[in-house]
Amino acid sequence: MDFPALTAFLADLAENNRREWFEAHRPEYQALRDQFTAFVGEVIERTADFDERVRWKDPRDCLFRIYRDVRFSHDKSPYKTTFSAYVSEENRRGAPPGYYLEVDEKGVMLAAAGIWMPPAEPLNRLRASLAEHPERFERVLRSRGFKKMFGELQGDRLTRPPRGYAADLPLIEHIKRKSFIAWRETDARQVTHEGALAYVVDSFRAARPLVEWVRHVLESGGDELEG
Image 1 (cartoon, helix red, strand yellow):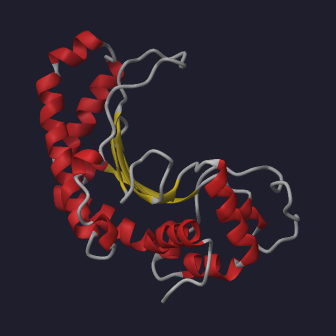
Image 2 (cartoon, one colour):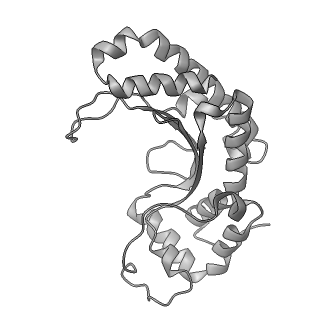
């Protein structure tokens, strides 16, 4: 994957975000998308070494479309200025836990994992598990490589505790979260194919305990984690 070429294309698209320009540059877009699909396939293959659940995922099913949904947006620009993919054993609908990769028009490569803005029912289950079993989530934050690589979780949180939760609970700041996600960034304009592959896969490996925690809570109701 030629990431400098990808970021240059996305930067040009950001300045010329209209159908006429895009159609004139469609061959360049398609060549880059094919490269990105192959790269995501390599990411999946290496991620499957430590997370068997994604082994048979088709990279084509992981990529997000380039076309924006402008029906309810004041910004009518027709195209996204990112290439992105979400690797999860489940369909993206419903915000399942998984691994996320994005490259944008500013040259930022983002590698993330966890669960982003889940619907109310799974979010309530995650919050309940934090309140009832804080030690299990604390093990995630202390897991080898997680704190060193990510430092802390990212994403928005409520200003006040959700209804039914006391302000003095041990993990109340995490209970306020709307997402349970960790990410880190690097400059896509400066990375080689192999360097980017190592960066993304190492990020996913370090974040696996977070993904496993979310999966376990949502699948089993938060019974004791194995291992």
